Structures are given as structure tokens and as C-alpha cells.
Image 1 (cartoon, rainbow, N blue to C red):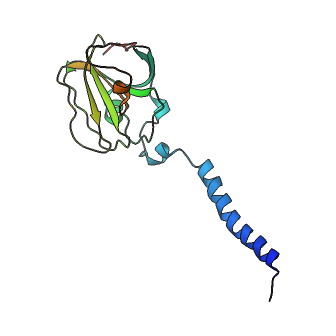
Image 2 (image 1 turned 180 degrees about the vertical axis):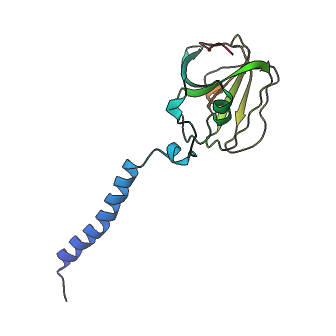
Image 3 (image 1 turned 60 degrees about the vertical axis):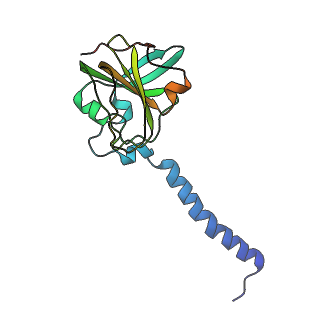
Length: 168
């Protein structure tokens, strides 16, 4: 059986376009990547309490992890952060609180702070590693931001983060 060239081209276009359209539709209707990778029972990013912090002239939208379960999950399973978004860890004791990056899919920077908001240490952390990141000084807060955020904003030890919720 013979088909005119125009008919063959039309059939080819439909054969290629339909699967592409289906893939495009599936991509736009799928859940966000971070939701798909979170295990059952994990807290969704929007479920954490939030705090507006300031570092110099920069406003930070911080999710707050102030209990053991929230601190344990932290930013695990997230695939992205908004430009000035981070996570604030609030501890109930003044100590050297160490962090690691197990199940954390994005590289982060961390600033450790005293109760008055003074930054004591800043460290860079690689994604999905189990290296310990410990401050040299005791503190009650730690703030995680996208990797390089603190250095790109000129935030260094000795500077203060404002708007911190009371430590428990």
C-alpha cells in the first residue's frame, strides 16, 4: 500500500507529537521533586514554622526547627531553596552543636550563633556527606542557607543576625 509523502509526514508528526505532549503534561502535573523524595512521615517544607530574620540589609525567610524531630530532618530531601530562604535551628542548650549532610541533596552554608545572634563560625557543607561540621564556639542557633550565601553577602563571624526567636 502506498501513502503520499504528505500523508506519511502527517502520520510521523502525530506519532512524535503525541508522546512529547504526554511527557510534557506529566511533567507539569507531577508533584515537586522534593515532595516525591521525602519519606512517609517527613515534614513538608511549608509545614515548618517560619521566622523573618535580618543579616545586615538582607531579609531571610527561615523555616524554624526547634524540636528534636524537626532538627533531625532539617533540610533533608529538599532539592532547592529560594534565594534568601534557609533553616534556623534553635537549641535549648548552649553547646557545640555539630551538623552533617546525610540525605541533604543541596550544598549548604551554615552560620553558628550565640544566644544574642552573634555569628561565631561559618562553614561550607557538601551535599550528601557525613562529615561533621562543628563550631569552634558554643551557641544556641545555627542557620543553614544555600552554599556560598554568607560569603556572597559579606556575613562573617562577629556580625549579628536579628529577629531570632527565643531559645527554649
